[in-house]
Image (cartoon, rainbow, N blue to C red):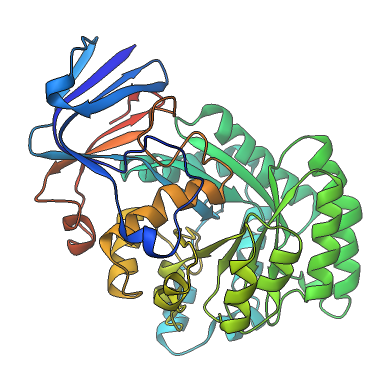
Length: 411
């Protein structure tokens, strides 16, 4: 099937030469073409450029007069496979309880683990596919989904099998991450090192044998897993061919960023507590710093020093952290708004952070994240809007009119 989009008011994030990511001052540049066309055939972008150069015919022609076309968002950090919701904990937060206090009372991740244990694999899949449909219609074309609400061998495998099923049936691109070390189960509270052994010696071999994960992750932070435990798990993951992605420095200066760099993590995520030493470590690495402003907003936490990180020459990615406890939304346009409003990023920096840099943070930079010849035909068309700046400006508005994934019109 071929699709031709014509009279595009602005074709955003075009790329003639491949760059794996955008960093520092370059993040303020967003290559675009006005009055443009985009031609796609099969699952692939074939050509694009100014309308006066368009000579293509296609089975489907879409007139995008007054509208913008973007590469689909890439959401490089989610936990969208979960059972039920946690709005009661949300009320506890309103009453003043902290994330750590709720966790100590059996809430948080442990609550989600209990709900997941009681939910069948089929029901878990059905719940998750509703969330997939929601994020697709809001412009996401590639998503990373983590396990971590299982906390037992059987339930972690259940989660990862559901993620694999989503990967095989959903219209968007899915990357799977094994996060067995997301929290310490109640029965291991005084025997944390034994649970680390379970993750390494019982969970990981089975995950690898069934080829259920693309990456491995650890929550390396205050009250969760230490640097030493994190390094043990990451090293074991590497032996099974799984590259690291780390939750780090959300709650304190944990050493997680440095551990991620040491083990060549593809990304380190959260990063509310990032200082000069952490920035220096990241500058000398291929690890993508990934911020999750929706979680910081929802939990009322401090914001990471995003402006300082970019001004230091770092790249930045922004992801949703879609999960039931701290970020119950996968709306990446809203994440763009948080990037501008809360983190003081420019619209151009934000769009680089949710397309090119998140594609890199998922290992998809060769195929996703920009409008480029030969890349996967994942794009969305906006409603009639003045310019790309209008998306983060009109926070909460649904400005997406059409979604095309792998060369097919989805919505």
